[in-house]
Length: 242
Image 1 (cartoon, rainbow, N blue to C red):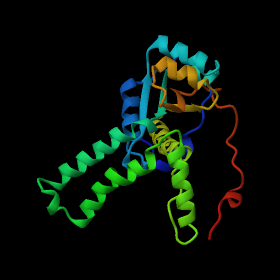
Image 2 (image 1 turned 60 degrees about the horizontal axis):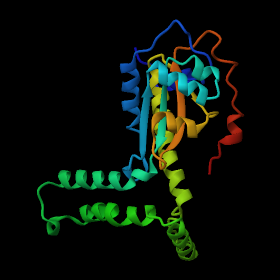
Image 3 (image 1 turned 120 degrees about the horizontal axis):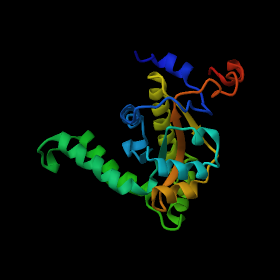
Image 4 (image 1 turned 180 degrees about the horizontal axis):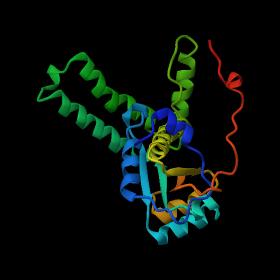
């Protein structure tokens, strides 16, 4: 029986050592990745990719790229979540095609105001914030919107660095979906921050525009796999009711 959301959250820990005798089903891991892609994502662009590594020779290379840490060395499988800001044009087109299909067989003149806005969002707004030329366009937009922001609320995250953060935030949400889905079926994970992301990109054959968001070791926890009790700062210190 799958755990409830609350139970899965409580069960999930960053497992540093996985049990070498216990295997995990690749198909179940794949199903957890399918849950990952249901995470919320900015503008529904889904600027992410998921690399499910099961081949021993690739796992061995990733262990070295993850600096030989136990969470990689003992992992039965590894999932690498990649932020793909560079795919914004392709994903914007996919959204536009989906919208047109869902609107039915209509002429542009028959679109409702809401439908025109949705199509215009992907044909005008998205290119405006994602298009760049050596970062200059983003900075010009940032300065313009900063001036406008003196008089009214305005969206300000328009620089290349801002859009990178947007893509990584969405990928991070997907990563959490994945890890909680794994926890719900009794599988364990460990998101590894310490890694050589340049080497990981080379191992996976990723293009220059791709960025590693998270490398997650997967398996079943060893009895010594969790290094200590869970610590969190007092809830009252981080909870602010306004």
